[in-house]
Image (tube, rainbow, N blue to C red; front, side):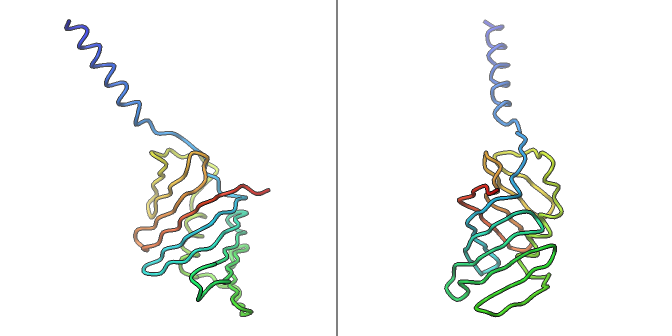
Length: 156
């Protein structure tokens, strides 16, 4: 009887510890489009992103109505903003976009990362990814910035 209890104890420990095994995944960080929602302090907006790579992506804002049509284009470390025919070029510190850009640049996405329940933790942010490697959200606690991604699709 004692041997049976010890056997059941070890089986229980093995089953419980195997449930928390971290997986590795390579996040999808190029050639995708997605719908986005950005929450920055008390401001929220929605739109879409076409992300070719860290040096080439475009964000189009669709709401709120007051900034519907705002286009943010990142090309080779340059941020250009267009809205209703007005253009600002060669911007760099464009708040939420520059924080996002600096974070993506600082992460070597060619590596595999351990993640637990779809979460990868870094010094200044947490990145949540789905089982296919698509980014679901990036959350920057110190900057009170959250970027949510949905309806991701690969593009070629």
